[in-house]
Amino acid sequence: GAGVSQTPSNKVTEKGKYVELRCDPISGHTALYWYRQSLGQGPEFLIYFQGTGAADDSGLPNDRFFAVRPEGSVSTLKIQRTERGDSAVYLCASSFGGGLQETQYFGPGTRLLVL
Amino acid sequence: AQKITQTQPGMFVQEKEAVTLDCTYDTSDPSYGLFWYKQPSSGEMIFLIYQGSYDQQNATEGRYSLNFQKARKSANLVISASQLGDSAMYFCAMRETYNNNDMRFGAGTRLTVKP
Image 1 (cartoon, each protein chain N blue to C red):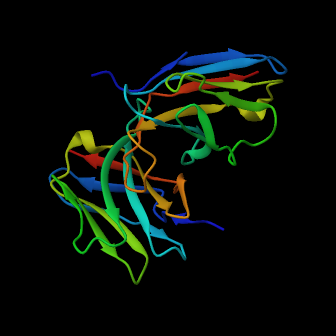
Image 2 (cartoon, each protein chain N blue to C red):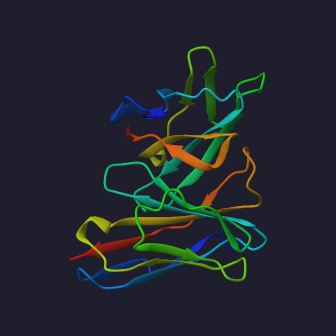
């Protein structure tokens, strides 16, 4: 029973470049979440998928950030024209459903560094 | 407005003793869920315990228990018989029914268990 996996584990890029971060949720989990965790802070909600559709993208900071989940399993978070302020750990989580009490299971995160 | 407040940036506890990590929250939603997660230095968020706002009893999971005081809007985590492996960051989080896809986290408390 594999947990949530994320690739790459670390990504170093230059300011202005485009990056893609991948998340493989637990098999059978319909809900998928992306969070961003800056140093010394708790995770900050970015976007929530229920199946293939983005049920809530209110946490995306601006239009440089976009995420997809075309087949309802793997999701990709895409960041265009990266800025130094985008440097953070990007966490993905999945849960069986999107209900209030559903436990979210987190992946190990992708540590993004924008130089 | 800050929804989740963890006032202890760092805590120390002697091995085998109990420790309480504080969490207060702010919501006007009568139906909500409270979560505690552990984040070791490896970075992965590990689910510990859940408390629903309508649950009559305080939640317990092994050495973890949640001291839920609804009127005071507090949900403190109690770890009994601390172990060296308990040293980590601990995050309190809340989900609200009207916005049940947005998990809001506190800033966290760093717990250090001393031998």
